Image (cartoon, rainbow, N blue to C red; front, top):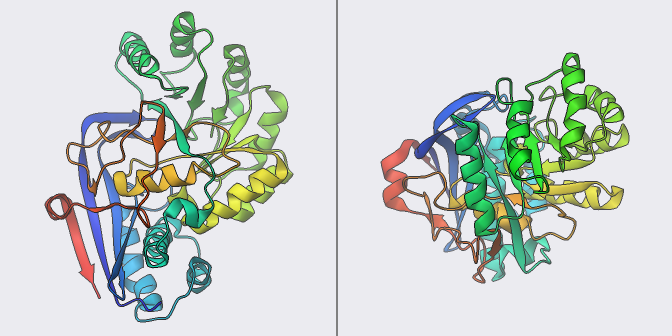
Amino acid sequence: MRIDRITMYRVCNPIKHPYTTSFGTQKAFNSLVVKMESEGFTGWGESAPWGCPAFSPYWDKGCFLLGKEFIVPKILHKEIGTPGELQKILEPIRGNEFAKGAFDVAFWDLWSRQQGITLKKAIGGTKEKAEIGYCFGVLKTFDELIAGIDRVTKMGYPRVKLKFCPTWECEMLDAVRSVYPRLTIHIDCNSAYTLQDLDMLKKLDKYDLAMIEQPLMHNDLIDHATLQKKIGTPICLDESICSLQDARQAIEIGACKFINIKYARVGGITPSLDIHALCGEKGIGCWMGGMGESSLGTTVVANLATLPYVNYPSDISPADKFYVENLGKPVLLTDQPGTYTLREKPGLDVEADKAVLDKYKQEEFSA
């Protein structure tokens, strides 16, 4: 198909409550939104790299400029037959996975709409429902956290993820496990530690955690392999996995037993499918993560969570968790807390709400 028109938006969308992790506190999530048009069809893609280079080296303004100056000129008015062909065209651009991810998703949405099939069918999803967990950031008190866990577990969420960082560590887990000794829990360190913290990290085995997500440096594999040999709790890699090669090398050296696949972090749906297939082949657990996207992005995550080798509840934020006004419509709604059933219309079956987009966009570019 021929790409007739591309519009990009840089968006800063405020959230209801501050969200605190080891990176700091956010009051909004920043996204790159791509609208791609061909032969009367429209596809939408979103990538949420945040407004500063903290989670990764990329941020929204950099992604916007990269898209405008390098990606759009490569694909506008070109004939591109499949998502795989798009990846080949973008391959000479090194890194910049968050920027590539927004365009990759928009193309998949456009392509599956033209094919008249759902995104789930297009990517090979096999599960009827996407299973999801709930994530808590760093809160003001342990009592507030336990009250939140009580609320979501009673609603039906099958597992809970807890952000874990200096000042919010083992004492927090002691408080949670004293109330929930058997609840499926894992912690997310967001690269807050080094091997110098080995004594503390060894103590985490006593909490019967499902996994420890990204305890060490954001771009490390070797130290994670060392750590995995010294602790019994499975390590899950997140920030360290930005490509299929990263995943292959991590698995080969024993750096992890799980991988959190975030489509934007790895460059889109196409590389996510490749990493998922590798995990299935090598017997490594995998699940899908998010970056605080609107329903444009969470719907992508939900579709990916129906893939056959996903074996742990994924991070898909409920529509009412973060945003005052959700950018994507219709919003992704749970059948019941803990599961999503995907809609049956072609593509993502989500588009940007123009009023919300116009309200919170920082920049726009069309070609």
